[in-house]
Figure 1: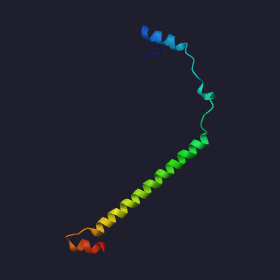
Figure 2: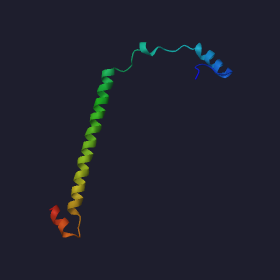
Figure 3: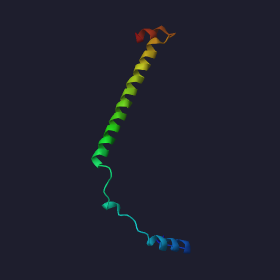
Figure 4: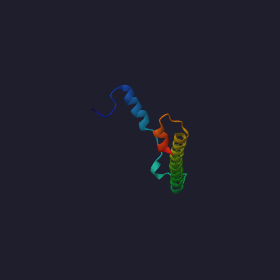
Length: 82
Protein backbone atom coordinates (compact mmCIF):
# COMPACT_ATOMS: atom_id res chain seq x y z
CA UNK A 1 0.00 0.00 0.00
CA UNK A 2 1.56 3.26 -1.14
CA UNK A 3 1.37 6.51 0.77
CA UNK A 4 0.69 9.65 -1.22
CA UNK A 5 -1.57 11.06 -3.90
CA UNK A 6 -2.75 8.49 -6.41
CA UNK A 7 -4.68 10.59 -8.90
CA UNK A 8 -4.82 14.21 -10.04
CA UNK A 9 -7.52 15.24 -7.54
CA UNK A 10 -5.44 13.91 -4.64
CA UNK A 11 -2.34 15.67 -6.02
CA UNK A 12 -4.21 18.99 -6.25
CA UNK A 13 -5.50 18.59 -2.70
CA UNK A 14 -1.99 17.82 -1.44
CA UNK A 15 -0.63 20.95 -3.17
CA UNK A 16 -3.45 23.10 -1.80
CA UNK A 17 -3.15 21.97 1.81
CA UNK A 18 0.66 21.86 1.80
CA UNK A 19 0.63 25.66 1.73
CA UNK A 20 -1.85 26.02 4.61
CA UNK A 21 -0.59 27.31 7.93
CA UNK A 22 -1.84 25.65 11.11
CA UNK A 23 -1.62 26.67 14.72
CA UNK A 24 0.85 24.87 16.90
CA UNK A 25 -1.43 23.60 19.65
CA UNK A 26 1.45 22.62 21.89
CA UNK A 27 2.38 26.27 22.45
CA UNK A 28 -1.14 27.51 23.12
CA UNK A 29 -2.09 28.79 26.55
CA UNK A 30 -5.19 27.10 27.91
CA UNK A 31 -8.17 29.32 28.62
CA UNK A 32 -9.25 27.00 31.44
CA UNK A 33 -7.09 26.12 34.41
CA UNK A 34 -6.49 22.35 34.22
CA UNK A 35 -6.70 21.97 38.00
CA UNK A 36 -10.04 23.77 38.07
CA UNK A 37 -11.33 21.54 35.27
CA UNK A 38 -10.17 18.39 37.07
CA UNK A 39 -11.80 19.62 40.27
CA UNK A 40 -15.10 20.20 38.45
CA UNK A 41 -14.91 16.76 36.81
CA UNK A 42 -14.12 15.15 40.17
CA UNK A 43 -17.08 16.92 41.80
CA UNK A 44 -19.41 15.85 38.99
CA UNK A 45 -18.22 12.23 39.21
CA UNK A 46 -18.70 12.21 42.99
CA UNK A 47 -22.20 13.63 42.61
CA UNK A 48 -23.08 10.99 40.01
CA UNK A 49 -21.76 8.21 42.27
CA UNK A 50 -23.78 9.54 45.22
CA UNK A 51 -26.93 9.79 43.10
CA UNK A 52 -26.45 6.21 41.91
CA UNK A 53 -25.95 4.94 45.47
CA UNK A 54 -29.01 6.87 46.62
CA UNK A 55 -31.14 5.47 43.79
CA UNK A 56 -30.01 1.93 44.65
CA UNK A 57 -30.95 2.42 48.32
CA UNK A 58 -34.29 3.89 47.29
CA UNK A 59 -34.93 0.94 44.98
CA UNK A 60 -34.23 -1.51 47.82
CA UNK A 61 -36.54 0.42 50.15
CA UNK A 62 -39.33 0.42 47.58
CA UNK A 63 -38.90 -3.30 46.97
CA UNK A 64 -39.12 -4.06 50.68
CA UNK A 65 -42.17 -1.82 51.17
CA UNK A 66 -43.92 -3.43 48.21
CA UNK A 67 -43.07 -6.91 49.50
CA UNK A 68 -44.41 -6.15 52.99
CA UNK A 69 -47.66 -4.58 51.77
CA UNK A 70 -48.41 -7.19 49.10
CA UNK A 71 -51.23 -9.61 49.72
CA UNK A 72 -49.82 -13.11 49.20
CA UNK A 73 -52.04 -16.12 48.66
CA UNK A 74 -49.46 -18.51 50.11
CA UNK A 75 -49.39 -18.08 53.93
CA UNK A 76 -45.79 -19.32 54.21
CA UNK A 77 -44.49 -16.37 52.16
CA UNK A 78 -46.56 -13.88 54.14
CA UNK A 79 -45.31 -15.22 57.48
CA UNK A 80 -41.68 -15.26 56.29
CA UNK A 81 -41.74 -11.53 55.50
CA UNK A 82 -43.00 -10.49 58.95
